[in-house]
Image (cartoon, rainbow, N blue to C red; front, side, top):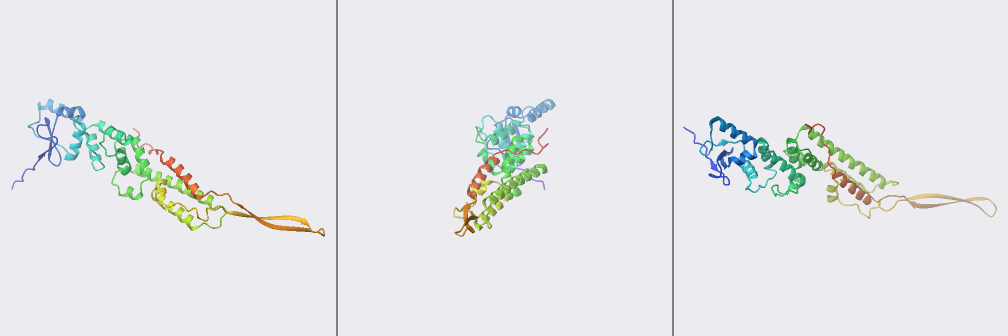
Length: 318
């Protein structure tokens, strides 16, 4: 029994008569596209048409067999829209961007790679192709990092690393983005350095605040423990500041601790005998409020989190 031929459909956007060259996607959709535009946009197709022309003088492929492509119809549709001057650049999201850039790189359309880096890096492009340009970097930095490493985009990789440092641990583990072992190791090292910086500052802040006190109140202790727990998962002070309660001004650690002094004064009584009078006085121990300390930490942390991290040595070098 003979198998039925696979049914094909025509692209709604690039249907019959739209162009003189026919491509068939992996899911059996036919795209009719102008050969001249393909030649102009892609050195790959320019060489393909040149070889075909010299080999058999094939001419137009309107009635010839379509060129079977490895890409699916969604990817081809986005790619062809992008290179066609009369089409609006399509919306691209985290689901389609990897396949789109993969096809662009395969067919040597390097301007698409440059456009992607420019759009995500600046977020100020003239198109609306990537929905909320910065959102791709903020919502899926691991994907951006993977693409930056794959297509050797160092500045974009630094932006993605800066964001990935402050991602929740669960987000890093569940993301399917593929990055090299070297990049993974570097990212984990950067996160550890950031966490250690916070822990050192918090420890110094707590020691300074409770100087001279024999006991630390439960309110301050639980607050600092909450900071430490959160920072180990998300090493960003903004995350801590947004989600944790502030220390209470009524905390008994906030009021100045007083230091007791013993005073002795020597004088003589009416019989000429020396008498020593003893008394006690107290003075406040200088101590900054933990609230003011945390405010300063917030300022320093924000400045640090704006800095772009360094890349692994040798990874992006030619």
